Image (cartoon, rainbow, N blue to C red; front, top):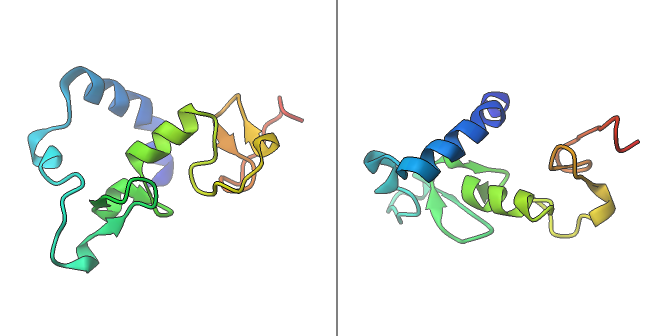
Length: 102
């Protein structure tokens, strides 16, 4: 699922930027639900989301913002020298290897 999400993320971001989130998703994004098992809490913004929108404790919105700022989205302690500017990935947390960075 993660590979599919990463592959289609640019198209998702473009569609959301052009048309906004679909109503059935927009109404649920960040909504507080009574059943904690249905929610994942984002460590970045503190909002609750279904598991589909949260990876490693970070929602897709916060992950996108942190990657755009060339920071590891999952661990603030990661060094800037561990960041791949070519693919916007952290060598440590994303277990990434880049031929251009070597």
